Amino acid sequence: MTTTNTNASKWLGAEMRYDSGVYNKHQVVMVRGQGATVWDEQGRAYIDCVAGYGVANIGHSHPDVVKAIQEQAARLIVMPQTLPNDKRAEFLTELVGVLPQGLDRVFLCNSGTEAMEAAKKFAITATGRQRFVSMRRGFSGRSLGALAFTWEPKYREPFGEAVDNKNVDFVTYGNIEELRAAITDQTAAVILEPVQGEGGVRPASPEFIQAARELTREKGALLILDEIQTGFCRTGKMFASEHFGVVPDGMTLAKAMAGGMPIGAFAMTQEVADRMPSGGHGTTFGGNPLAMAAGVAAIRAMKNEGMAEQAREKGAYFMEKLRAINSPKIREVRGMGLMIGVELKEKSAPYISALEHEESVLTLAATPLVVRFLPPVTISREQIDQVVAAFERVLNSVNPREGRAAELAAREDKQTE
Ligand SMILES: *Cc1c(COP(=O)(O)O)cnc(C)c1O
Image 1 (cartoon, helix red, strand yellow):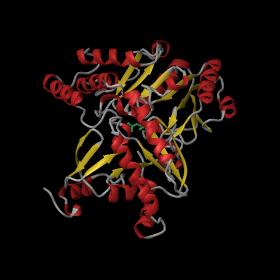
Image 2 (cartoon, rainbow, N blue to C red):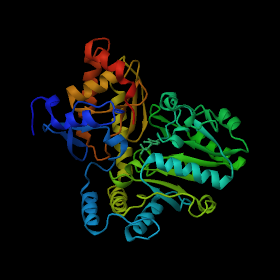
Image 3 (spheres, rainbow, N blue to C red):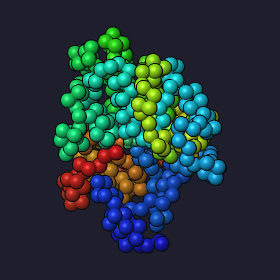
Image 4 (cartoon, protein in one colour):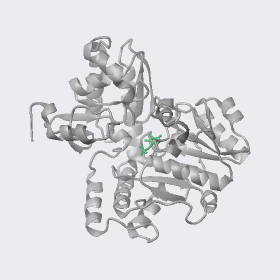
């Protein structure tokens, strides 16, 4: 199976041949992961600052999650939510135990976009209203319902009027006056990410989140925080909203919640849950015992291993080292915990590509100018040092106006989550 020419890989050939074509695939085949390291089919090791787009927070193949999946797979894999299940009960108890007080009703599903769909439906039934306020540069997922909240026009425009965002008003993230003007007595909910991920790694100011809480309360609208990327220790707390002292009416969750298994959830207050008619929403795979077992193990590992604190300390260390890089190409280093973005004065794609090919470090874009780092919280300080040194080398060596770098910059547009 080991080949000297990656392009000759039968795996890559089959994937390029049969996949739908919506992804801008890297020319590499990944086969294994452990902690913050992943390996390709030729045995080359990479430091993974993509972590499945911020999924592998507790590290790839955490041993407790592996064991929980193995045991549960041998016992019971599927059981619909009309039939109660021991692992589901255990997971819900574990999840509600770490959620902010007041959020103690949970709709279980399988992805972030499904969590947003649930949030939308529950917000409509809870308020009897259908208008929403979302954020410029916000990202909420790719289903037609969630897409209506997603700012980036290139994600929405190919689908025309099928994306129903006549009922969505976009406001500038951080602008309290615009937010105040947009929330009316027709607003069902304000949707916002405590730190915008896809939109360039932009932490909200505490004043903005607090104003969103007060303004929604005044107008009888819900505040729904999208913690799909920021949740589960990524920002240095279990949930980013804890940094702001704000408890929303609903929170969307997914990515890191089950240590790598597909999962999603909409957590809400009793009042929000109460208004949804019985049978008003549902999903076949939501709350399946296998994802539940992985989720129990993942949340326990986050608590037992102090993952939030690790993210806080390592994030501060990582950002301090990034800020010490002396390069005229850097405009700003920003982030929260281990959700870090470096905004360049030019397109980030050639640097992301050089990091992968020349330095064996995986990173991702967040808007065309930002290099985003979302490493597992288990990343070591030595690995952080290696990543920063590698980044400094590529900043010094890559000339984005030349050859391969220019070509990559030209096709960077498809690089998204
Ligand atoms: C990833 C993400 C989503 C969509 O989640 P999927 O699981 O990809 O559907 C929604 N909102 C935010 C903030 C995200 O980061």
